[in-house]
Length: 445
Ligand SMILES: *Cc1c(COP(=O)(O)O)cnc(C)c1O
Image (cartoon, rainbow, N blue to C red; front, side):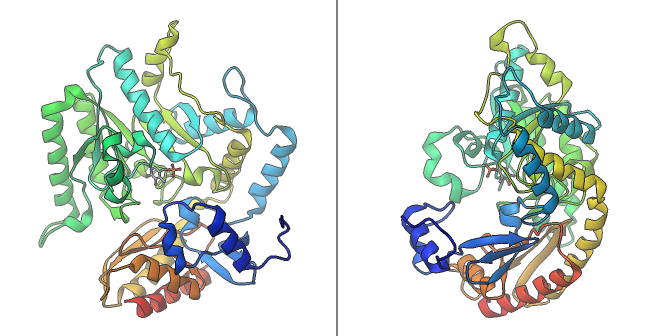
């Protein structure tokens, strides 16, 4: 078997991949015409193939990469960690990286969320938050609180429990019989504002819908789960921070937990480290993953309060939270996360992203001048617009293919095009991203 990479061309890797790798979130037959890119290496915001072509990773490789590929500082931290400890189980044992990471994250919430529980992927973090909330109510004498609430268009991952709180038909439809569906309540998507309505009016309607459900059903409901500020996977639906403030108050009024799924919007993506900061609230559970390891290694976690923690702290083992994953708190992944948090601190990334967001907003405004563009929108380092193409069929795939020819990695969701780039783009790269996107739009729409 030929395993050396130097002599193999791009098309060889593609053929071998299509024969042996079942790619995620893909109808494999589409690859009869859809290009598959074999990445050879990465540097900064760029991914390179084996034949010298390059692509600007404008979606941070599915929203995980914060500081570019092959980042020298994260690489150095990982090389150092690799020679110390690659992994040790986290039951009965602990290690420096997981302790330091938990302390730092707790400090970032002013110690409101001072207990960190670890897993490896985002969906598992969501499952953990759901289970902890459910189990909390059982431990505190409210075993009847077993139901969950999610928002219309919500996405919280694709394992069976997470699908129960997900409302994106392409992911849920085939599996409806496998899980128990949460209550789905109107979302505050700012695009819903009618003539003369503000985003605040949309918030009021959405809060009212939530209040009606809680008035009727709160005694059976464990938690409400939301993606703060931006519902990403449904197509970058953005909403007013005031919704979160009012939702927090409702959850308090009706004794229901609030779970903030910051897997996509955390780690500076919306302009503050946590999206919840923009509403000056803390949830009862916060899920993090994706960017937390800088896009290097699978790592996820759930942060929660002293109150929740204390409800499990007891001599009886069955009152404890017995959930685990084999790689829980993996030292390499935690070390990558520590290097990521160090960069936020040392480089004041939140501040430098303000300048970057402004450039991105200016580039977006130029693209938005195209007559097929609807609802250009931005929250921090997330830019999106909807397209009304002459032909809707396979729009996302045609756009992706055309973007590769402009050296851009862009992967629309339906007819929504978005940029979610790493926090290393230069002014020049941003201008290039804007001009390239406009050229793609001219080709496809
Ligand atoms: C990506 C994502 C998840 C799931 O994370 P995985 O690591 O893909 O399982 C959950 N919630 C949100 C908001 C996400 O964007």
